[in-house]
Image (cartoon, rainbow, N blue to C red; front, side, top):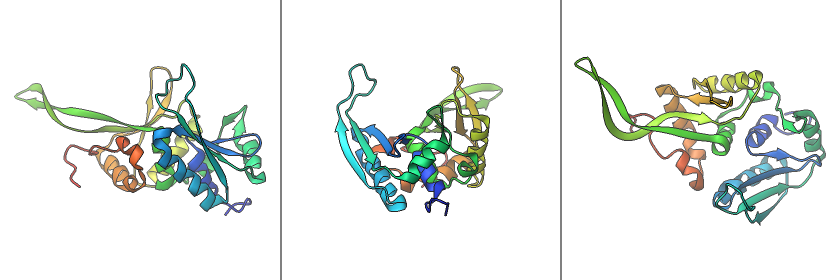
Length: 221
């Protein structure tokens, strides 16, 4: 337990992705209306774990928005300790969770991060060397890699995230996008299986598209 009498690892895990702390000490989440079940789950966990009462409301999508659905918003009531964390964890209005907390993330924390910011990259073929010639063979889709779209995290944050995955026996790497964004990638077969099997019980109906194919070609449930 922390000086705030809450589990800061659990709290950081819930807000790491789409969560936001206002200057007044409110925790807020915004998701597509189609992901209402997941947003409500996070709100319920905020109340169960941290005593944060919440309000919920629907907002029409803004004009010229990339969204295709209305938004569902969770607004947790302000707490002094949350306001203190806002002052400690935000630099120039940018969330910057301490690395000693990130490095302790477990699979529940990663389930929030994956549902907020994760995606699977799938592949539907294998490349086989036959008589010295590389031959492409079509096959059932499977995961090429699980990827976490993190934006532009610091080196220390990336290292802390990888430490936490390593503690779960999940090997990861850094994937640098053309625009300079740096993402966490899980591509080793054994790590993909561990991640899939560990996280699947946390994935909500509206988020099943992020986990709807096998982690490897040879995987059997």
